Image 1 (cartoon, rainbow, N blue to C red):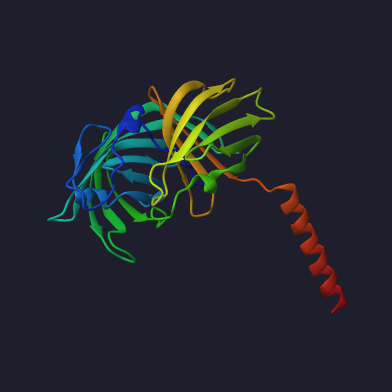
Image 2: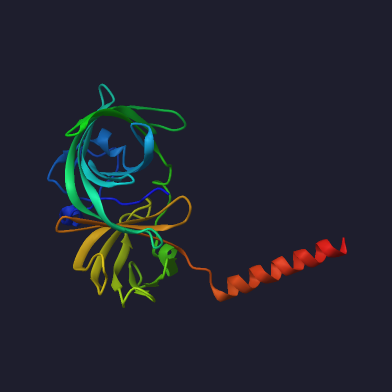
Length: 279
């Protein structure tokens, strides 16, 4: 199963929101000026590192958040429009705690630095593929990434409002107008719970700002006032990408099936079975 742990730094929430490729440049969370060409890479990318396992990347305003089966990544990217060559500078942190059933992962372990160079080219849509090589503290290799085509999906409070489920965690999100309040409880994890807020970064793009006000009584990770991002995946899952003082935390939830939906599904199945029997 592919892990979905992404890296988010606390300064991220102060970054500029402008994401138009027509901009002369924006200043990102690292204080770097990002050129318009690099902004065209904003989005979610899936692929492989050395063509083994799976790698997922969020690129946003020249900052990279990434993951594979054993590490979470954070770093920067810059695209040269004259060559279509992108330079990536990443640090990878080992995953130290996980709850595979709930889809919760923590990365705060030993780090490895990666210097990567990739060529951007087009397959199905503009600038949708990135292929290249890397050097790291542990050796050299290659990588391949492809845009997952979800970036231009609209974001909205209504899309995240409702009940979500992950293992024994139940997550409830209530609209407050332009943003929403969230609360999660766990039935079997010693009272582990968290609350906070979520709101779209820009309704044209599939990205949400998140503030985790408090996470407490949890065996893997407890913190207050943690910033991060969230997104709705192509499969309709809700992912959270969080950072707090060097601890990288990820959570993923699926929409809960309500009692009414469950009853309707059971009724439909019964009716279909009865119809088949008559035929």
